[in-house]
Length: 185
Ligand code: FNR
Image (cartoon, rainbow, N blue to C red; front, side):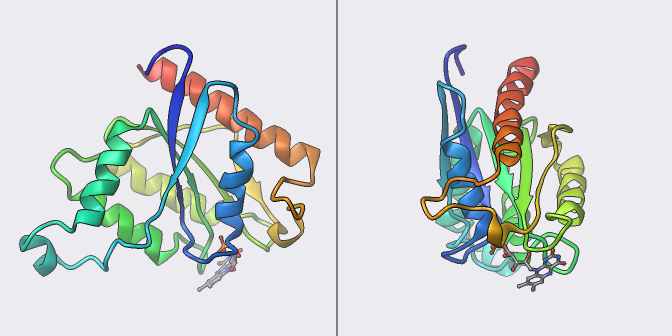
């Protein structure tokens, strides 16, 4: 990390092509402060956690993702909410990563946001995700909180966010993530 750049690795907790959470990350790229890069890493190739598989060798997809997280200055996660909690695919990826020797989230600055069609905008899922990072010592920024409700109405056709207030809070999340990362370094 140098003063002029911040490399952020983003994870979407949804695999589907039209994911509002992936779209929210894409929209965030356009709102990032100068010098910040946001690269999305997919969790699609992470297999279901199985200790028997792990004991025969950690899958390459897990090792690659762990290294990308280690190499990043900060992590940005956009999570859906499934049954009031973290989607299984995201939790599964975190579970694999958590067993890596140099645990990639340890001491890592993290910002969380999320999008859902409901009113609460993934609030319950985000609080569960925060709890997971307590154990992993992932340093999740407390504020601002970005809960994008009615996500099916939130985006323009070009992927930008319709609402000024939403754009502002996402931009603020990114600015504060940079300040948070500096502070922790
Ligand atoms: C959902 N959805 C949902 N929404 C919500 O606000 N609270 C919830 O508890 C749930 N539970 C839930 C469970 C399961 C199994 C599915 C598939 C969906 C709806 C969910 O927010 C919606 O599908 C989002 O669009 C998912 O995020 P992506 O894929 O658009 O990023």
